[in-house]
Image (tube, rainbow over all chains, first blue to last red; front, side, top):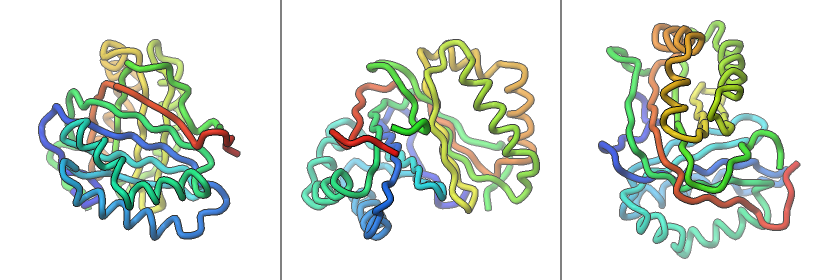
Length: 115
Length: 115
C-alpha cells in the first residue's frame, strides 16, 4: 500500500470531504497546500488524509479525524485561518465541504499489495 | 458552480468515499469508469458524485446516496459487479472504501461563482 492512503482505525471516526475547483490564479497555492497538509497531520485528532487533483484543477481532499471537536479546533487554527482567507479570496473558484461520520470501511484488492 | 460538483440536499445523507491507486495496467479503465459513473447517476437513491485523479493514477471518487440501502443495492448491481471484478483483478493496485453519514455541509466562496 503506498503512502497516498490514510491509515485509519476501525470506525467510527470522522471525515472532512473537501471538493474544490482552483481558480485561474493559483499562485502560491501548491506551497500553501503542502504546508497546510503537513500542519493538519500534526494536529491533535488528525488520523490522516488523502488528496488528489486533476490537470483541470479539480481536487478532492479527504481528511480523517477522531471527532468533531478536533475538526473544529483545526478549522480555528491561526495559520489555517490565514490559508482559508487566501483560499476564499483568491485560490478557490468554488468548493463544497462536507463533514461526515465514517460508519464502515474496507480495503482491497485482497491479497495484493500496491506499488 | 461547474458541473464537477454534486448538488446534494441538506444533511443527513450518505457518502461512499472511494480512494484508489490504478495499477500499471489500466487498459479499458477510462471507458468502464465513465460508464459506471453514468449508471450510478441513474441508480435509485444516488444524489450525485465527485471524482478526480492525478497523473500518477491516484483517484478519489465520492458518491452521495439517500441511504445505506441504496448503496447496498448499487454494490449488487449486475453491471457494477462485473466492473468491480475487473477492478479487483486488473485495474486497482490498492483501494480504500469508506461509507459515511454526512452530518453537515457548506459551500463557498460566498458571493463568487465558479467557471
